[in-house]
Image: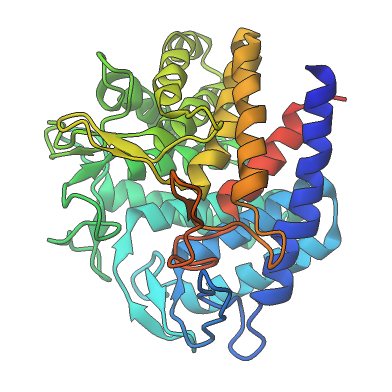
Length: 398
């Protein structure tokens, strides 16, 4: 096992530094309009006039900042700065606060809604850049976004966070992140990424309110979002926390299993961490229901109909590698580490694009590569796979 894990570590460093990051540096930097291009198709066609998503920009900023922090490479800091400068110049709403959802290719606003999910990602990214550079303007902006989320989105009556607002912070009728989502007031996904953002912010900003709200988010997952019977995450809720979904999202299950643990560790509440550790192994095991003999993890299952989406998208594979390794670290059960190793073998053989760089969006159960969805785009960013590499480089000890 030791040799296999050290081999994995070596391969992941190679993957990050010779495939994932060079793709974004060499193929996605927009020298005409600044920042990074908004899209490359699954057939490797650059779309230079594509709109630029806030999620994409924030995730690029986080990835290069985190790589610079871990690998001490000033080149990565330069690319992080490129994303940071573009965000300050174009994505931030100087009048109303917060970040726009989408820009035109020229950097002017295309969709000015304030999706809380996106505000959280900018917190996550700005903090990471601050950790590398000590640029206090980024910490100040992250704190500003935290205060806006707490002011506008936090439900003081029923707990949790509402989803989406207009440019001037009026709650929207259409709250969805994407067309495939249910139009509900509260979602697992937004809460998971507020948790992730607040965890990173707490590393550098010791605020009593932040500590209180991070603890509250962890408890929301333990008490409301993790299903007590199945240990899968429930995905959509009304404002009263009534579940409105029958889907199991295996990728989100395993991602949450390690992000909730990370949040509790950073918060430093020993009793809460004990509560977390009693549950997250069960969440990892629930996610493992989606693992196939190939080592891949499928997308999701509808528990009401039994229908399984057997496609294997890129990001659940990356999250499975981290989440199962985290379960191995906590339990010392090598079967979890085996799942990480098997997932990587599947990714190497099926999802990594060794010819054109980065990772394909998805592979079907029959092994067909999805070239209809983006290679790079609004949702296809270096965050899941880049973060997986960085997490495991840190966690696997020589």
